[in-house]
Amino acid sequence: MQTTLLLLSGLLLAGAAQAKTCALTIGSNDQMQFDQAELKLAADCTTVELTLKHTGTLPATAMGHNWVLTETSAMRSVALAGMNAGAAAGYVKPGDERVLAATPVIGGGASSKISFSTAKLTKGGDYSFFCSFPGHWNVMKGKLVFG
Ligand code: CU
Image 1: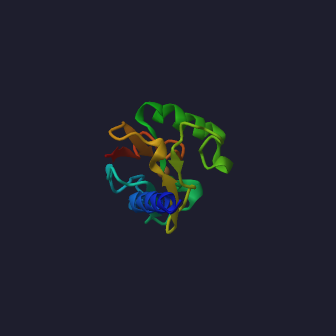
Image 2 (image 1 turned 30 degrees about the horizontal axis):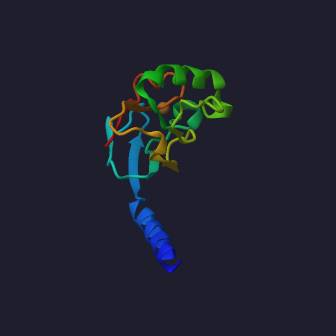
Image 3 (image 1 turned 90 degrees about the horizontal axis):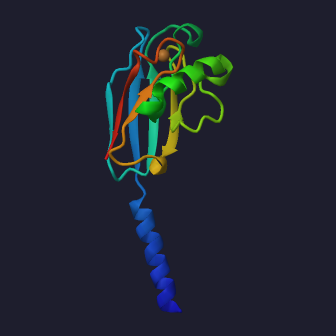
């Protein structure tokens, strides 16, 4: 009995030790740009804390930005679905399971921080991030490398 308890607590400790939160920060501006074309996530990251900053001054209605993560193959269709979902939905179709993570749309001077698990990501997979504000996704995009 005691051995079992020891074993269990040992497993719990091992599990806790394996959890690793990794912070990513990306900037955006009034020129419709992200400041990085590639974000790297180490293979042992279990949770991601992503901060999106908007260093511009234009309001979200004119130059709003968000950060949306999908498999690269889904990027275009998710962006178009988001555009159709409209501003009230933050340009992300509600319940879209292809969306692995997304921040709200922010305007100049604002920032947004989200946290998501890497459980849905496969190491070495082909992932892209982009801004789903109408007209932005084809310019404001980059790769997320996991592993
Ligand atoms: Cu944008």
